[in-house]
Amino acid sequence: MLALPTTTITIKRPVQQKDGWEVDQSVTFTVVSTSVPASLIETGQNTQRRASTTPRSIRGVSCRVAGGTDLQGNDTIVDEVAGTIYKVINVRQPQVAVVTGDLVATVERISPSTS
Image (cartoon, rainbow, N blue to C red; front, side, top):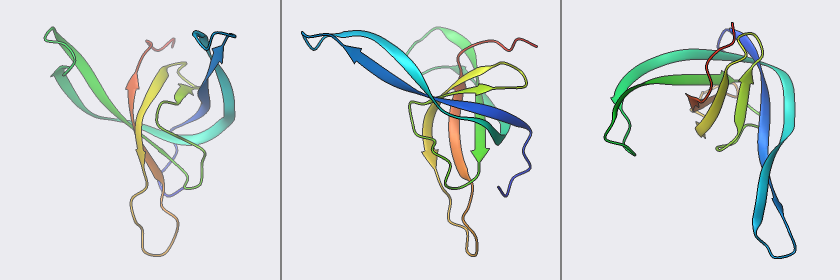
């Protein structure tokens, strides 16, 4: 990992459960990996979200993990130090000339921190 890790995270992936009628009954999460070194940094703040006209404060957060980590859009990550839960919006890997670059994910906090 090129960035300095600030925490460790658990990566969870949603798994949809279907019944015999092919109707979604529930969504459960399977743990993809734990104790992944990561850097979580607040990158900005919006006062309104596009899906709603209600003014609210949305903090932009960026998550960096080592290249090759199994992290995908729609995953959920849990900050193991603070206990905060984030939803992964998108994942990209910027080009680095010599080494495999970090994965950079845009994440959105979906729970308050517990610490």
